[in-house]
Image (tube, rainbow, N blue to C red; front, side, top):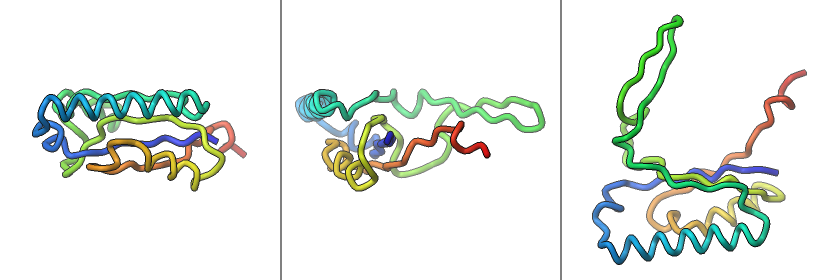
Length: 120
């Protein structure tokens, strides 16, 4: 079963890190990704650019609007994701607990839905 782990953190926490602390965090994240890959658990994982580079797109009444910045003002921003394979939600939560960003932010775990399975 596939799950997405959405990694949230306050960008201010990342910005306030020294370069050595940031390098350590990156090394830990890459090592975690490599270990999950070796276990056959990691499908895909990516870090995201700073939230200031985001563009939020909406279509209402056929009209497209694009607004710079994130969707909502929050204390934590989406910083990356991992698409993982796990037997069930409990196993996915255990995997998410090993993501280094969980120590200073949060990791939202959600099952992936195959839209073809939603149809009657």
